[in-house]
Length: 295
Image (tube, rainbow, N blue to C red; front, side, top):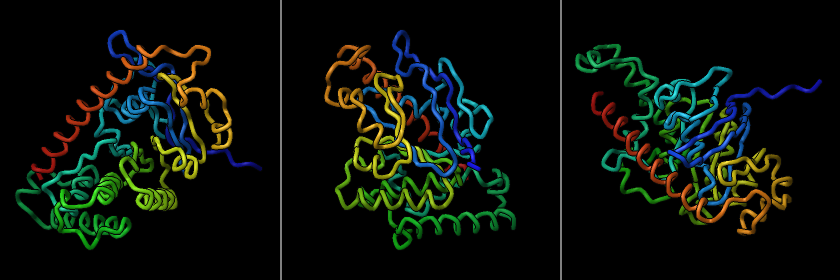
């Protein structure tokens, strides 16, 4: 008897418009428990916009996003509390905080101590603080940065900053981790280490959804791969199926296929996507910083 996969994330008919421009159009998408799923597509395909719809940074114009059967509220902190965490294409660490402090920031959704508890620093607060630090150190051990716990984040090499951002996302104890271009700017050795890290994360029981331009990285890792082209899902399947699809090859080589948009439309989508993503990410960093200072 075949066991049916258990959906963790389900997107149904997700559409995102910026004024008269449609960046994502009627996308259906599922991530099952224990899966690694890749999301690929040319620049301007709508990948980051779709990620932002999944994590509450954007409110989809149409459609729904559900986590374990419950429709998610369009607020990032509530999505994180539900059990979804993400990293960003551009590193969003707190440069002047230590490695350990950056991971502790990620714990704020899992601590119940409030402002008065923090001010009075009673036994309950100290116990929660010890537990958070122990958990943060476990994650630093896991990614190989425990020996740099007191280093400032800005002083880490680029590849280690990427690892630290993943650890901070994991600190919220998600069951689904979304990684936005985790190997961007990495050399081959760092990319291989990240590949091993993602497999290790999956072995901890998390599902992983990743956007990536490194095709070898995606196809080596993923149980399934979905391709977005100008905001629409073109094809979805195993790595072998996707690599053999002529429409995917045409999209990446810039060759036209039936129904393909023009260059002007592609450029408009990419520009709107980048501008909106930067604004949303800045707002998220400001919110996280404010919460960290309150503690």
